[in-house]
Amino acid sequence: MDKPMKGLESLFPIWQALNDAQRAKLLIDATPRSVEKDTVLMNGSADCVGLFLIESGQLRTYIVSDEGKEITLYRLFERDICLFSASCLIASLQFDIWVEAEKQSRFWVLPVSTYENLMESSPVVANYTSELMASRFSEVMWLMEQILFKRFDSRLASFLLDESAVEGALALSLTHERIANHLGTAREVVTRMLKYFQEEGMVKLARGKVCLINEQKLNKLIT
Amino acid sequence: MDKPMKGLESLFPIWQALNDAQRAKLLIDATPRSVEKDTVLMNGSADCVGLFLIESGQLRTYIVSDEGKEITLYRLFERDICLFSASCLIASLQFDIWVEAEKQSRFWVLPVSTYENLMESSPVVANYTSELMASRFSEVMWLMEQILFKRFDSRLASFLLDESAVEGALALSLTHERIANHLGTAREVVTRMLKYFQEEGMVKLARGKVCLINEQKLNKLIT
Image 1 (spheres, rainbow over the protein chains, first blue to last red):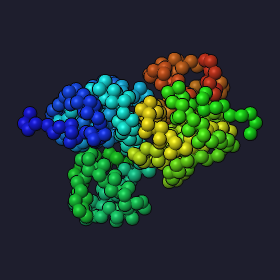
Image 2: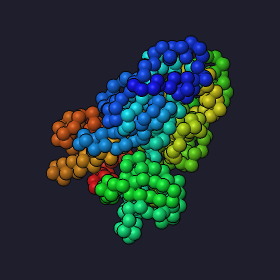
Image 3: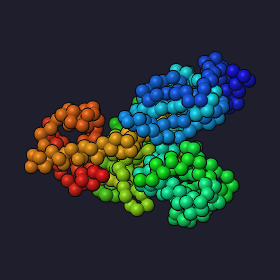
Image 4: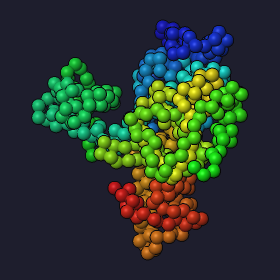
């Protein structure tokens, strides 16, 4: 490990709301961890290893079908907290989730029992945890609606591949606004899905440009 | 309104954990409401009318596509709390949801500000709210996995319709165990999906029996 990890003081989002005893306990109990790219940190079957507070790198959260098909739910970046690696914390969280490091990553592991005590003694921590879960829930609902209803992933992929064929180029000069007009939707919807495509390694975004970098993967979205 | 509604004391799941002041405040602020079957209580666009604590009846929670296609997420019964009718309570809950009464229903409406104060002052209420959200989240994840991956809804519908054709009857003598063996899955998975079918009005379940009551709807599940 090269440079020392940033401290909890600067990473933990609600550090200011903790009292001295709570801070001291966290500082003692949290342990740093560093993992290589592609390390699987949680493999669905309800490990409960603790909360990950990310200092650097990138984690991917996904579900896996019996046949091994994966769907990415969301990604976690610096200062994010991975709650589902400690799903035993919340008894009603009853589903299997996978977490892997997509880049070399460093994070603090906060033990379940320590965090549980915090939640039980501090409404701020408890409500913060609710907010964390709600934002993951919202990501998942968004994804589900896009996939189930709108097939907007499919429509956007299809549009991009068509444009690329017409232009005879992989780098397309297209604003999100223009794509939205073409597809009869809002610019925000296009931006969000393009960002998802980029995270999935299908496109690369630049100002006023969309570059297709994995046509095969885009093609798979079209049904 | 006929007989008086059951009190919060017997309906609110964590009444015992509240102190006298909190109880008194809830008793003052909660208002009873009675709605007819098919009343839409929340129509997606982020009303924030308060939490519903159900005394009797049945609420259905669902999402709706631009084209009006609906998917039922889960149902709420007696003593359940509908959190999403107060989604402004949790800032990160950013998705639209519909709620309707599937039967004539009676419930207490707990104002957002009252509940918010409870959450902020009581870790028990805050953590209980997390558990509530987690269990809805789990329901939604289950549904998403079934639909996206396994198409188990489709496979089960197809199996039931085939059996019915073979038997020349709508009432099938089939244990969940036997269906699970046929479809190569676990009994629990069959039971849960059959329950979902029953709630959707497609089958009626009795001991060792599955009766098809809406073949057209079952047929629609087969792709």
